Image (cartoon, rainbow, N blue to C red):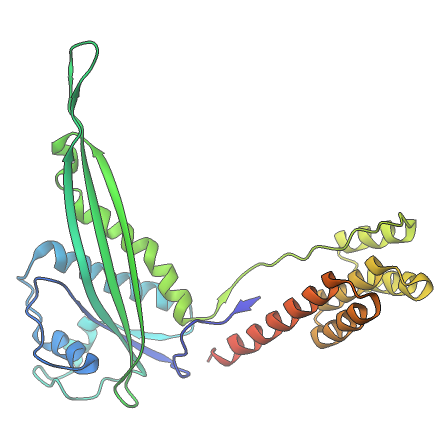
Length: 296
């Protein structure tokens, strides 16, 4: 089942990943998000701040890979853009519907000495390196060069050990944070598949026909189960039978009919469980329709 993306990318089919800024980098003077992203594309300095630069490049590479893996976008990386466009043209159009760029807002490392002398009189060396990373992701439409969405994510990770073991762990920890953030970013901009499970209502009447219908559902014989639930409900208005019949209808893909049946059951039984389930069905249907509209 598809869930819709949080951010509407206006039907984008092509995405360009542009360089991410970082704190010690020379910033573009008084430019909007679109111009600043292009400025970094043409005028970035590969000699600047190796740690921050490496983390920024890692963000870009992970975004490129993850967006490509969605199979919903054609993805262009910054290096490809530089090789096919004229250097110094910071106003020219990029051959993409959406530009993804942003900035490392915070990248800090704090090493704490936790060494101690044990009860055995021995000295135990122990240090902790705690890395804090905050990244802003910008989504820019090339149709009007407008910033259409911003997503900021913040996290921290730590490593413990001897000083020599953790003193150079900052980049690795920062990259682990990035790797954990990227799926959240991708879900924000691309519809994603989820597996949802449905729970049948428990039959309090202990009707053997209901037990038989439940087994049919578990075995995947949905139409036979639906027919049996419907027969039971027609005979004695068994709430579980009506509820489960509507659930099986949804499983078989008759979503609108399932919603109508669940609403009718809610009205007839005044049972809030049926009303909640009808509302859940409506939400699920609408989300699936929105997700479908966001796919190419």
